[in-house]
Image (tube, rainbow, N blue to C red):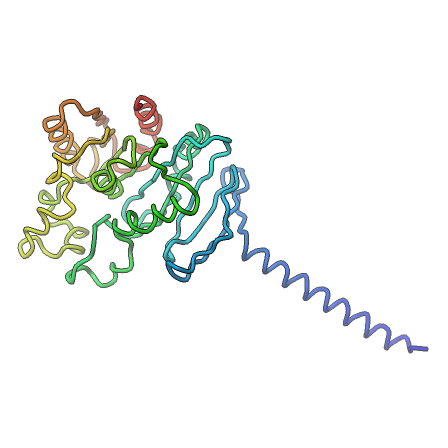
Length: 309
């Protein structure tokens, strides 16, 4: 017969082993699916950690109505998945300089409203990028880590097309950007004119020649007085105005103290002069450079996109 104290020790060991097992299972579960609460809804974030271009995870699926966080070349990309059975198309949402990409979701109604209409929304983390095509020897060393526009075009979009079937050419795809992201909108529209039906740009800059002392632009291209050609010909939407052929909604608050409102007005005037038949809409209310203004433009943007065939 086993003495009582020996039996108690054995039972205690079983309990400890079982508790350890439960802890391990919990850790594995947390690593696979992260759950957070946003706007009173449960949001599932699936992580697909990629070690390289050729080592992408293949086990991530887009579940209707669930948000999915993936990594493309170790860069975070949030995908807002519509709950509708039929996908209308995909939005590419570009954030401002050093803005969290999910601000589009937490501070405006764009994601909520577009998702209800059957659109998927892609929100890449761009950090301190100014949507430049490439970096230069003069680019600040601590800014080389942030994605370029080339990454969006050559890596992000092809991956989403091949993996999830997003951004199909026959669907209704759109780009929306604010602040520095508006500059990205104009440049990507020039690079991929067949992929998108229309674009919207809020509070952006489109001609860096008028911003010769801007710290962000100087930080990427080097000083204007040393690299005038670079400033004029590279990543300058206004210098490529004759190539622009996508319908565009332009918005800018006239009380903007961050980006001069005339940047948008000059771009609008150049577009309408070079392309009188192109659908271009300008809205410049008395507003600042903030989410109060950008959020107020959501219905205008969606209404503009609905008009596009």
